[in-house]
Length: 332
Length: 271
Image 1 (cartoon, one colour):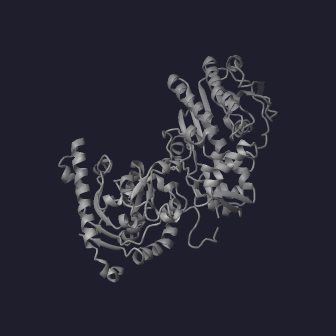
Image 2: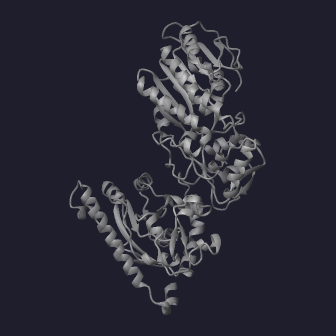
Image 3: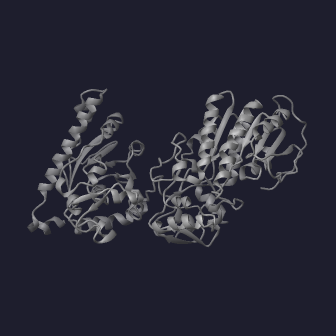
């Protein structure tokens, strides 16, 4: 995602150009949207809240250093947002992978979301767009097929390291119900697979040997990073209140993904691999939380029809995303 | 990608059904069913099932041999992609078993899945006894347990689905269960484990079925609306229809059990 050439625009007034606030400018979605500002229509001001400044020299972007885990972050944000007359908030300050410091994850994802929502109301913004992930549905053999947006969020039970993402989603749902005047959008991304993605799944598939579980071959869905950014741009441009799955129209068996990349599968017995991964995680070795292994065991297939109908979001197929990831053009 | 014969990647449906796998494996399943389980199929009445159809059968066995064998026998009589058995949740937590069942076309039993398949015109094979039928002990052999709370009947009435009762004899003998082990099973996340002549003595191998004769009898379709006698059935009516369907299945189970010749006629059952 290279930085686009910047074009100077006059600072907007009133309901004219977009006045946007972004949290989490180092994440895939935060940085992707900042790099694609020109595709958002007229943009007046972009206020970035993060610990690190964004990698952009765009004069419309103003960086405001803020630690979302610090009490009082909401008041500080609200003040800056009101000053900059922000109308739209993109909340992308979420962790991609499971982290060992669950206390910090809780402060950042769950409490941080509360702060962002409180600041949004205090600054009287009209639109809030929140990033979420397929992990909020959890992983089990009891998942609906395909998963609709109104399916129960079982992430905290089956994927404990992601429980704060579920808590954040619940907070956003309460916020949307209490503030119907604010256009609140939640986008639940399928697993993003791309060369610039540093999630554990992309990293694992880059290695020559990929662990799998003996006797299991779940269906997986991958979405291309460019498609995810496109969906966020659609929601930042238009009015699309609600929750949407960002999912490709197809799914692939994991074994076909491994074969497409010419990788070697290393099948492990799940009765040993899951406790083994738990021991490694507890000992501080590696970054594979044992709950990831349940993703190698059970299929997770989201229903993307709502986003297709309401947003006009037509992502690449899983097959094409996988082919692009492994450096082959088009579907095999 | 082309190294796997006859199967293109990405052709599985959203449940993981792989038609190419089915075409390759099902003939083997049918041969094993006929040789090892001396499986036989009797279709009473006309086999012209039209529109959405749900085959309602009695259950039996820890592993879904009843579903796999019935599917292998029924599929040649069904146009299209074949019947989709609805199986217990726990089946899909078992390594290999869940995977192969999925690739053959089995689906986790749920209202949503049944409606989805039926709305696409795919015939469904349901076991409304649920897990109670799967863990029937030797002492309950041949009995047909309660058909849930009538969810299947409600679904069939709502979607105007044809209901075809099926009686299966044999799985109870293939899994002679003395008792159900429920507490130890909970440790491994299963609803039960059988205490049988082979399990746990032989370890996981003891969970394989014994080669008992399996006979499947398919009855005449039941017109649920006629039995309900009303377009807007209430709860009592649903339960009455549910009990009627269970009665039909029990009848067919009885016929399937008596249709089986004694040991002397073993060779004849091979055809």
